[in-house]
Structure formats: structure tokens, C-alpha cells
Length: 414
Length: 177
Image (cartoon, rainbow over all chains, first blue to last red; front, side):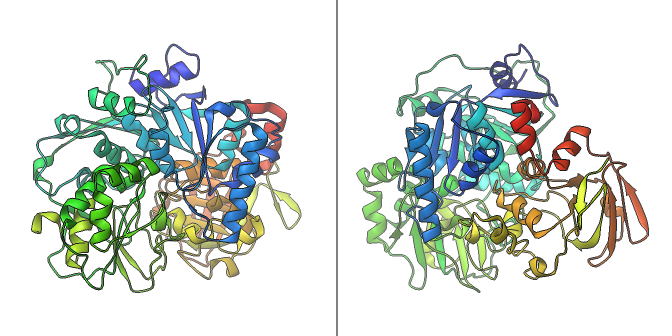
């Protein structure tokens, strides 16, 4: 069996599960974010009276942090009241960060856990050896009532990354390259495992970028076998290592795709579609706004890369650079390291840990005709505001280089 | 088997005007992020498909059918994307394939979703009339008929109940699997 199958088998009380089978599994950690008052509505509509496992349930206020509208404020208020009534003590209120990063730092998530969140990017937590997957409101309400949910056991495709990264190339460039090659429906209902020397050499935060964006290929979940790098990261947040499921040597993958990462240059997803991936265009493209942040590209490593590029320099006139740390802890670490001071001195606009303008809710919405470079994961038409705005998805290094020059460019060109 | 209400009658056949969309219609196009703080279902319905076709919500009639390519409903997990279509009156979404979370949300909310992998063999245009039989598993449009694996009895029972809610109250977690 694959490690992910072993996780599902354990959680559903079986010795063995096979791909395609439907199992009802215990959920170890459930998370509701602040887009989802519908969870509470569905909870009562399903006949819910109490939450089965309040200590395994978390709420994170990240998409509207702090509340930009009266409606969002009312939704927060209703959710706080629900948590209080149901005895849910893991309420991460505004400013704590994006749910996936908050959970990674919570000490609740690690190898072997089943983590379900009301957010598609829950695949991020596969980089910690967990089975992380996103659901909608009604599925989540079922988890709150029963502690369980049905899952179809996925087949697993393996993406093997070998070689050494070029200068100015980050995990984000690799995953964009992979999505551009395999396309956004390549992994519907499948799990995607990332493996190979290039992954083993990556810091934990970069591994999370690969798993985060696996959902942009349609993946149900993503996975990287945990190692010393993972345990060191988790230990910082109080995780205690226990039994770790390991994939059997004779497990047969649905497919295996290999890449030599030394051939990959800085990449961008061109406006409108995350799988329309190209090298950085030769022509001059003026950029109105650069955004560095989110569950994809707002971790300490991302902020460090930007600070190193902007050290002692200024953001180009006519370009706005919005930086939002992925969590309060990331923010604090970046302050201690001096990155925040460097960035603010360079002219960066800093905002509250959370999702920021990624989904067009607030804190940097785009006007018609504007062009943006973003370290987030999606650039569907209208994603960050006007449907007439254009969003290029890129790495933190490319974002910072672009902010410095005011035109789309890679850090390798500086 | 009686399935759906159309103008007060129970029918197992969905008839309506067709709206055609392409591949990878994501949830931001189905329901833009700037309306995610809304919670009233009727209000949510007024923004259906706004990111792809701003006139959709004002022209769609009860029972109308969305026809799309691959990966319909990709992107965010927002259940608003299903609630908006259901409450705007969409009778069914037929696509070559669906994104996983959208598909689960649709069944839970009782929105008919039908996967027809060979759908592009039809020459279908927006404005054509479509007839969908979800029990027998066929879809007729523009003089062509395409066949598909009918919905399972379990899924039909959820759709007939208008979503998972009453079945769950009756059977608990077993209502889902």
C-alpha cells in the first residue's frame, strides 16, 4: 500500500484499502475558514446539535482578516458564537494567518494525520506527511456532527524531480512548469506524490509550495514522504514524532513523471489560466502591482528572498508592492530577521497575515486594465478584482525582481 | 422514478435551454470571490456564472442546462458555486469532467451533475434545446443523442430529496457513502 492508503486504512479501521474503494474515515483535524458560515447553516439543517470532537475542530479567520465589510464582520461574529457554544477552543481569529500555515504551525498536524479543511489548498499539508484534502460546507458540517467523512481511495501519480536548481529558480517555478506540462485536469481525483533528490534538498517551506499547487492539477491530495527536514520543521511547533506510515516498496503508481530541474528557468503562468505557463516574456511588460503572500508564497523563505533582492533599494516608481506574511509566526520571524524593516524601507506596503487580495476580497484589489505579478496560485479571470485585470503567477524571487524594476523580470536577470 | 420538480410537476427528465461553456470553468467564474461574504441563497443566486457570462443570472430559466468541457468547477472549494446554480434554477450541469470538490458539493446540495466524457461529439450551441434523462442515461440536443452511465440509485435518491439533508437526518453518516 501507499502511505496515503495506510493513513486511510488506519482511520477507517481496516487492514487494507485499495484505490477506487469508498471508506468512511475518522478525521483527525477539521478546519473551517471564514468564507464558510454555510458550514454552520448546513450543520443545523443536517440536524446537528453538538460537535462530535470540539478539540479536533478549528476555525481560522483568514480570507477576511480583518473584516472588510459589515457582512464579513457579521459572519465572524456568528462563527465566534458557534465556537463558544460548541466548546471549540481552537479559534484562530483575525491576524493569525492563512489556515494551512496556521495548522502547519499548530502542532496538531503531522505524518499520518487526516486533515480536512474548507479550502482546496489543504493539499499543502501533504508536505508534512499528512493526508490533507479540501471539502465544501456540507461535507464539513457532516464532519462536525459525526467526526467522519467518506473518501474514495485515490490512485497516486508520482512526480520525480532530480538535479540542482538554477540561480533565481524556486519550487514555485518547478510546480508552474509541471502544471504547464501536465495541465490543470491531469490529476482529477488522484493523489500526487513529489519525490526525488531535488525535493529532498528543498527546505520544508519550498516542499509546501509543491503540494499546495498540486490542487491546480485537480489533485485530491498531495504527498511528500517525511524526513529529517520535516521532523525538524514540525518539532519547532511542538509536534511529537510517532508512528509514520511508509509506502511499500512494491506499490504500483498510477503513473510516474520525471523532470530534470536543472533545465527549468523562472516561469510564469500567463494571465487567465494557471496552466498557460511560459518563460518570462522578452517584451517589456509594465506591472502596476506586485503581491507577495498567501498559502502558496508568503512564508519566511519567500519574504527572505524578497528582502535580499530589495536590500538597500527601492520599489520602482509607478509599481505597488504588497507583502502579506502567511501567518503571525512568519511575521514575527521576519521581523526578528530584519526582513520587514528592509522591505518597508524599500517602499513595500505591509498588511495583516491572511489571504489578502488573492481571491479579490480586499487589501489590494485590481482595477480594470491593471497588470499584477502575484506569488499566489490562481489567475482565473476576475480572481483578484476586475475581470479586465491581468494576473501573472510567479515565484517570490520573480515578484521581488519585478517590484524592483517595475517590469516583469526574473531574479536571474538582475 | 420521479426525480425533479418542474413547474410543480415531478419528472425524471430535465428539459431546458442550453448554455454552453468551455473547459476549466473555475469557481471564480461560477461565483466571483467578491460575493463570498453573502449567505442568503436567493441573493447568492443573482451572481450565477457572473465571471463567465454576466447576463446568465438574468436570462437563465428553471430547468435550463449548462453544458461544459473538462474540469468544470475547478479552483476553490466554495459551496457558493453550487448554491448559486441551484438557486438560479439550473436543472443540470453536463460536462466532460468535473473537479472533485465541486462534484461532491453538487451531490450534497442536490444539483444534478452528469459526466459525459464523449460530450464534444455533439455540436451544441447556447440557445439549443436539451433533453436530459438522468435515469436512463441519455442527453439529446440539436438532433443528436449521447449516452452516459446513469446516476446511481443512491445519488438519485439524494437528488430526489433535494440534497443530503433529510437523508442524513434519517440515516446519519451512512447516507453519504
